[in-house]
Amino acid sequence: MNNHAGTVALVGRPNAGKSTLLNQLVGVSIAAVSPKPQTTRTRVMGIVTVPGLQAVLVDTPGLHGPRSELNRRMVAAAEGAMSEVDLLCWIVDATRPWDEELAARFLGRKVVVALNKIDAVREKGKLLPLMAQYGTVGVVVPISAKSGEGTRELLTEWAKHLPEGEALYGDDQVTDAPEKEICAELIREQVFRACGQEIPYVAAVEIEQFDESGRAEGRVVIHARIIIEKPSQKAIVIGAGGKMIKRIGSLARKQIEALLGVRVHLQLFVAVEPDWTTNPRLLRDFGYPEK
Ligand SMILES: Nc1nc2c(ncn2[C@@H]2O[C@H](COP(=O)(O)OP(=O)(O)OP(=O)(O)O)[C@@H](O)[C@H]2O)c(=O)[nH]1
Ligand SMILES: [Mg+2]
Image (cartoon, rainbow, N blue to C red; front, side, top):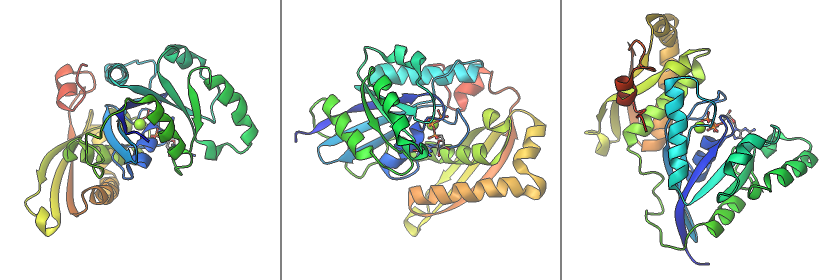
């Protein structure tokens, strides 16, 4: 088989499993995943290399009707990625009804449809009508991003739509995003998972210190700020007796250690920046640029 190489954007509704698929394909957590919609806020880059194919993946925020400034920037990030890649992979949730609205948007574009969460569909016969409906948009590959089922077939399908060419990255490279950025994402993931209600949607994470001087000895020191909008939210993130922030830190540390392959000393701070989700300068500072 000839070598194929190109860029693929993972697109779709919030919560469809785009980031889960990215992590499954690259083999390590680099993108935040949670049961709550709108977990991903910016593009996250991953690289998957198998014999005959190297795909540079762009995980994107879910497409939804934006109501706030932050949401508008999230959707713009997804749309920007869509316009710059060789192929779109539309991730759809097989437990949800046929999505006619997005289908209309993708019609006429080069799209492979990944019918995801098939592990959660008990009656497999229910998949057939969905396969037929999504089949009007592109080739449909049923998958479980969670278990990995069907993902090999998905890669084979992508290869057919990507240009012939040589790999650009080494076959062990999983991303070209800075480690700092991924660490911030992994901390934000734990805030998303741990805190109920409004906190996930008003929290940003900024890495203040990334000290690698002890890396050769197997130790990295990271200081990060969790930014929220109001003092009352700060109390929630810290929790009674600091319990919540400890839990966030310990779960994030484990994931960061898996990524970096060294022991990590992670120190978290909580800071209040009133209205950062609407302030253009702060939005940019915290990693959500205008375009
Ligand atoms: N059962 C099952 N659950 C899945 C599968 N893939 C993803 N999920 C779950 O679906 C939820 C959302 O997954 P994400 O990967 O965060 O979804 P996303 O499309 O990136 O969502 P946004 O970033 O919010 O747009 C999580 O609870 C995942 O564990 C799957 O194949 N099977
Ligand atoms: Mg996501």
